[in-house]
Image (cartoon, rainbow, N blue to C red):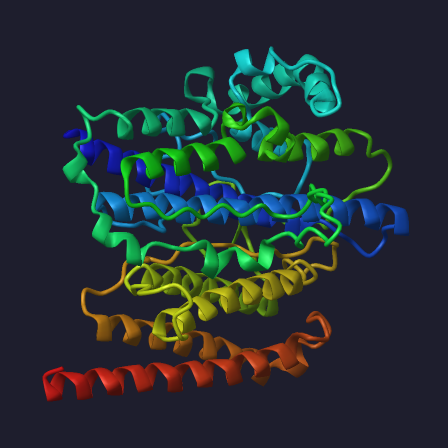
Length: 458
């Protein structure tokens, strides 16, 4: 392969890994909670949930920054997941949706873990004491557990792929200056679009520096127009997540690795109670032919809600992909199609969170046991947009129509499903339908304006 082509392939692998990790972290976070927790237990569980959700949001920032690098190189963006087999040389472990346990957090730590030689440098101190304890007590135990599943020659921390990407993109003999497409800058994701909601409160008028909250997201979304900016952005996201040794020492306690170690050490102290709901391993809506190790959701009501979740997940991914086709022409520009599309992306993030919160309280099957359903995060047959702009908007309308069909079924059967559906379910469905009608009207206006523009030759 030519070096540029190989680099784009590695960036696709990195994007798919970030996407997979983000979804796994979200599922683990959604699994936390329960009706039988004491106030003290609930407080602790909410803290762990906030930590994991903060990391999942940052993974979204990593995913978007990788897309920006692809834009800069003139390569196709990707929001696929698991297209390349998990035993590819850079995948850390098989994709698994599972509730938060010591086992699952061990795998997340492994994915985000610095190289063993970096961990060996850990010394007890104010910032790194818990990491020092981990390096000397738990590191080898976790490595053996992961290698036992994926075999030693296939277990890789994700930081490895970033170190290789950074090496390639920084080499002027392999990647020429002419390979960088600065004119694509306007299509890249921007912190102004994504990061404001996760920014820290400003420092007070006293001038004293406010301490960063360790559970709050530190979203990194970098735009770039040069090789130097691309390398800096990749080091930044790798340092925050999968290669924390690249971070300055004073910021190392904000890495994903560090935060997951906090959760791991907390879970080790749990005795006599469960911090998670009984959600399944790899939930699926498929009645047959689903992958080995999956758990079918068979209760009719839960299956409809899980299908709705999958549709809204697809909607999120298609709006997200579409946002990279729409140029941001100037800072502070008046809201237009791009701004409205970004608004749809944030709306779908809220919808996924809401539907997941409903699913984890609904039955997995018709039995009377305590097993609950869960958000399946099943990938659609494709997340590619049509070549034509008008056809892309028609695709959005098709997905909305699919969602509306499921909402109608659930509302028509709400009496039948009333005993198993959380009380907020029907009202949420009606609100979702109302918002979708507004979306269809908005898309129709876009399509009408497009037709008028083509007729007038504009």
